Image (cartoon, rainbow, N blue to C red; front, side, top):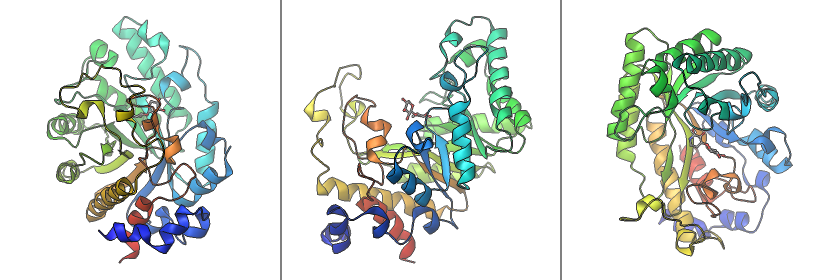
Length: 369
Ligand code: XIL
């Protein structure tokens, strides 16, 4: 109700009428939340190269932490067995340093976006050599510059068992400990995180807790857990998120929300009985907001973000960082995943880089105090 009224209020109208972004807000996310946790964003190549002045101003003004969306993944940074492509990552790190930002490395060991040569590797020894050289070289190059590494990404299945990745298949479950040890050796100062999606959900959470406890029991350094936070306005479950924050932090580690976005579109897996492999591309039912986001959905999105940040603030002593997965709606990967070619609205800034009602709701949680 509150937002229904605000939607009609003057300031909102000013945004809708195209009032320019800096004129609208006297504060920013990073300054409002300065005493609580870092506020981050994921950067693509165009951001790192500062191609769009509006985007650049917005990033510097609103965020104090950055994660590379793709350019530190092994397929990009390590395309051939003996060749690394450091240029984009060097620029990313320079961008963070020059703007005094907290710099996150994403990610060292992941089953996805691997270089092609890895699929041709057969022997366990060769997989171990790839992983070892990769971590030593990449984490070593940025040692002292990267503040935090997502060391292992998405090692779990939904039921909490370990995902049968090339690393698990060839090296056994000890690969996780090996990866963390290699990262700690290559960059002793970086905070080391285990990162995954849906690990707030009980079964998968149990799997993550297992991983963390085993690392701790063997004296391996792990500083935090990253809950990705790819959620939906239709199914957001604050209770499980709160339980996860509390349980993870009881292990003596920090919790970060590393890839936050809230889809407003239907997901294929929400449709009961729908075949996930069915082709939904081009279906208007799955892409309802091509002409703009209806006010009612804008309001729901703002309300969900408010609920979420209220919860984050309640547990701010346990949370190190909240990072959005992208700068603005136009940039979000959710326009292309899980169905290509859709128009999604999952972030706090719209396609013109203007703050949405959700931005206001997140900021006002702080100014209300
Ligand atoms: C996504 C990127 O946003 C896309 O541009 C890319 O095509 C695929 O990967 N979990 C992760 C992120 O850890 O690295 C993924 O990023 C989103 C899911």
